[in-house]
Length: 144
Image 1 (tube, rainbow, N blue to C red):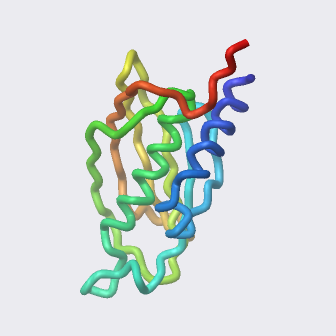
Image 2 (image 1 turned 135 degrees about the vertical axis):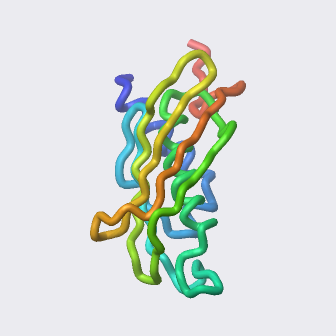
């Protein structure tokens, strides 16, 4: 299996059990080793008391892209630390895209940046995630 095929297989395996992403109508737009792009449309249910996107939904989109990027090697990997900086508000109807890219991966630790933009390319938020590989694999093992 090539690295790209492995990343695609891992993403498919994760997607099957990712009820949060599916319930928020996220779409997996791109997957590659150490990279992922996901998108979702902001709905009325995702707004806060100011009538703009609730930061938790923006964080969830970024965290999901981060998860797919760092799990693209078939080693179960979780978030160890994450931080987000909100740059501009999101509005109902905006199509947000989170693009995750790997900056570093060594041993069991990884560092990833995720940029969240709207349909016009305006930066909505920047997210940085530190990952930690734990036990297990996403894909079944053959005994051959």
